[in-house]
Length: 455
Image 1 (cartoon, rainbow, N blue to C red):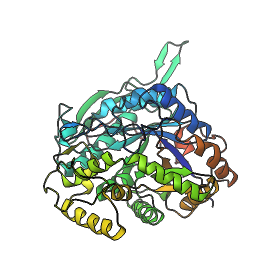
Image 2 (cartoon, helix red, strand yellow; image 1 turned 180 degrees about the vertical axis):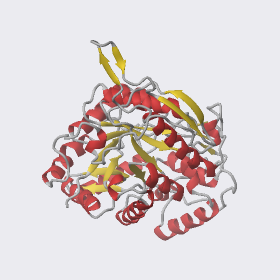
Image 3 (cartoon, helix red, strand yellow; image 1 turned 60 degrees about the vertical axis):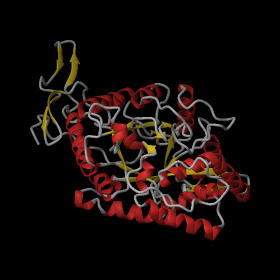
Image 4 (cartoon, one colour; image 1 turned 180 degrees about the horizontal axis):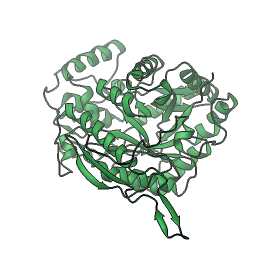
């Protein structure tokens, strides 16, 4: 059976893949930018728009890391505003389970699901660093091994709040003067090691019952969390081989949680570069990478591994001969990527060997080691390759990350999407009323009972 390709648009915002200096690039925070990307995605039949989140401005060497684009508006405010200017597009927001409370987050997502007519999605993440925690009363209050435990309890508690309404309590019968059929609607009580709350949930059951749940994480704990509770997983495993291995692994975990393989969709992040010929597209892609990784950016990236000031380093020269400073990374603050280099001395050795073998300068090495999965070629080449990934179970769809804001998906929507539609693997119109329906996810069971007890 031919699988349908699900597509999502990532608003790049705070990200060093964004080429903010390009003449075509516009504001990263103006509402008009969000509207442009959302409407482009909706015209092309995308499933949803995806917002990442940053809870503190990154710093390097004690200064704001302005080589990333600085500034990111509040997720719920942006998605609620987009709900008013779109009709079908799903609205996915990243919200941390570490520095929020279940009641507030559940209330915001239930409200967004009502306002959008059933298009809300929640990417559940665990914020990990004390640096980010300084912005919050709780600070860095949980060790790493407990963050997924809190996330699992957080999501479970939020779902209890979503299910505290059956959905048939509000009748607003003006003849009899009856507004509610059940005076206990919205009542809940939850107690565990992380949360002890009870009361009434203020938002009646929303069109989807709850938002579609996303999880982003590659650790074993993250994969297990996704297999147990998420509807979709956001992954960086974008190459065909790595994608197939990841896809098989997370799908294999589902049965022990009583779930079928259709209940969890896999979305890698990817970029697309188009050209009139494949050769032209590859030349264009190389130019974009040089824009994304300036000499200054390359040196700053190397500092995050070497954990020391390298401002005197020539980006067109060789890598440092001295080793990184071991221990906790202190020069870069708020960057999750620093956790990927837990043994910086080994990383430095590997990179020196790679640079020597290929004759790479600092900048050329950074371009190579930070490359993302990309589809590069003519629209025909890209459409065929994306279709292969989905049909051969490397993924169920893609979250496209454009390098330009807000017009970075315009060409893809106008040239690649029609080819996917001709292949019969992408919708020509929306058929579902909610994001869950458009993603082909099974309907949620009705709440089994409304009264909640301590768990």
